[in-house]
Structure formats: structure tokens, C-alpha cells
Length: 150
Image 1: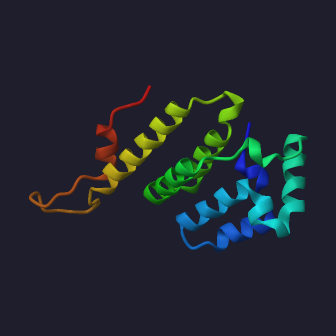
Image 2: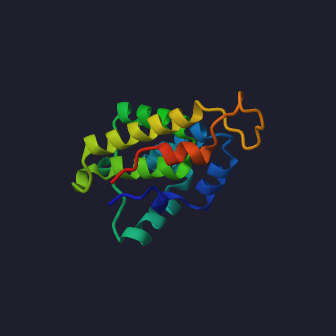
Image 3: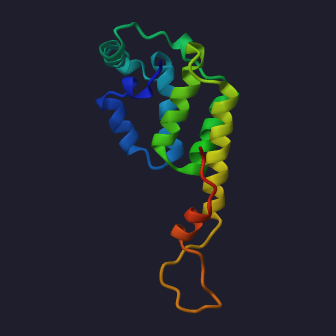
């Protein structure tokens, strides 16, 4: 099973930390899947890190993500602004050939995440509003009203 973390070396970590926003970080992660093409100066160390974790030689053709899905990942990253969730999505999409994940289920979950984050982002949260007329919902009250997933 694919894990993007198995490709992140110190130099790549430095680039990720240096990136100013989630979209730039996501672009680095997407390019990392095809590291011989985009990070040729780090090919040896990335290959070695992959081998240490998997005991196999990295074959980028096994993990290629189609352009439409890469665009979706970019949009997903921009909307949810969470690098951990972006990595999870990349890992799942790159692991499809393993048969562990279902494409439709992955995309539905990601769409649900976008919807949830967009819905929550639409609210103006305040924690100390004393006026009854202008009282805004708190994050706690909104989360309590969200449907629970089983």
C-alpha cells in the first residue's frame, strides 16, 4: 500500500515547510509521486527511503494519479486546508491498484469532507457575544448538531 510519507526525505520536508500555503504543499506532494521527473536531484535519497520502508523498488507507474484526480486533490486541499487529510487522500488514490480502496467511496468521502468544511466555514463563530439578537452559533453547538457517521 502506498504512503506518501515513505517518499518524504529531509530535503522534501524542508521544501514542504518552506511552502507558504496548502496549495503549494499539495503540489509538492503530487510531484513527489513522480519524483524522478520533478525532484531528480533527490532521486537517490527518495528511492532509498522508499526501499527502507517497503523493501521494494519504487515504480512510479504503479502510483500515478490521473490528471482529473490530481485537480480534485488540489481543490480538496484548498477547501479543507489540512495537509494530513490531503496526504490521506493521495495515499488512497495512489493505492487503488492494490484493491484495498473503492474509488467511488474515496471520492464520496472527500466530497463529504469538502461539504462539511465549507458548511462550517460559512458560519461566523464567536465565543463571547452578549447580545441576544446578534448571537452567532458557537463551533461546539454546530458540531453537536452535525449528523453522526456510523
